[in-house]
Image (cartoon, rainbow, N blue to C red; front, top):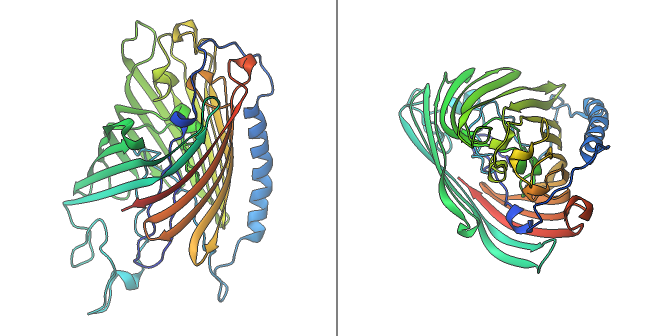
Length: 442
């Protein structure tokens, strides 16, 4: 999720962004027969060893190079920060909403008579400055641009595309009750118009705990990213279901438990109860932000991507671990999503005896360009035993983000994919893609 935020005072920051999905454009038809891969030092393990090697020195360096904002004339670097840590769930990771307005200072909360107190705030406030209820709010996200792809096989393709049109309605009749519904149009209509989220939340305004019900995205994986493309971890693990959940946020810790009616399990493909958990830490390391999260899903076969492939068979759990660290203008993101064991023969020929996993490592640097917030991000992603899901074995990315106006951001991205080798059932070839898009959120 590429999320851009800037601004000061009462001026709302540029809206949060999402990504263009390349999976349908870069994927190709493959033979369903998949051979078993023997145990080895996989790229996933190498990637996480590299992450561990990077985090330690980065934390130490951040402590010695952190800017002293209390010194005369000191100021925070003008940069596009990384995604804020989520302490609740239900949102679509690919189409996140605009951030809340900046916190008010005392002067802003009580302007002098006749002074302009800035643009309207949401939720709306009465004459005393207190939030007023009920209120109705409409948010939206529009992403449009040009995409070029040169896939593993076949001819190259380019097209103008409306990749996302997402409208979100939020109704809050009481401080403790919030209802949200969103409609989603994607990829020039190749993905059908659908009801994305329909969610009821009950909980105190300070958010120390909450109860959710309806159709929402489960807290399995964080999927934070500054890229335009969806991370491969999201492709494997993102799960939207109809269910219920209970969560808490007690600074600096957060967590959630949820249950839903699963689809993939033994017993002739009939539905059965499924569940999951997430726990995490969102706090400070010196002057810098650190978010760690660990999630468990009782049946990874219920994820949005796997449910299209898994035919039947025993349940196979899923694990998701993520890290988000911000040090000044620098951002480091890492995530790993995997099945806890191999799928059995009942899962179908394409997935039998496979234990799919995906990972991502990403570094971003924010700076000013022509007095506008900008960011450059580089990423490496990969997967193992995920040929049946048409994921690449490895992916390299480079993205440039520029917030040209409030709520408007230009994004450029280059992607290079490497397919699985012929011995693993793939083509062994590589593919490339380039995206130029404008995202407008309100």
